[in-house]
Image (tube, rainbow, N blue to C red):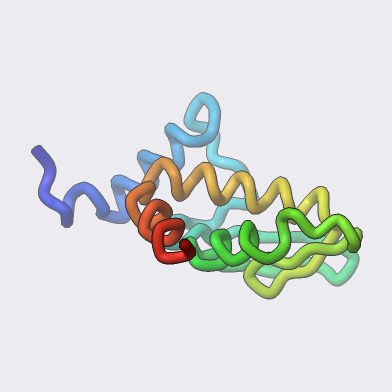
Length: 113
């Protein structure tokens, strides 16, 4: 049985990232990840930007932006872009947090109600 420190160590998250992405091939745009964040590099017409997306950002996205069909633009963690790309990014982040921190997502949902 792992201690909490071992279970949530940085090394364990790298192992989890390897499991999360097919055949252990971590996507080039993923810079790092932890229990409550994932850091990625986004690229658009403005250039490259390193973006740290927290669990709170993902919850906020799904509460405020995910069902907004009036705009072609959506926002996550202060990054605005085409709704399809931002939605795909939010879904990927959500799946990551489901893998490493499902309990915090459940707590966030209960506190919303």
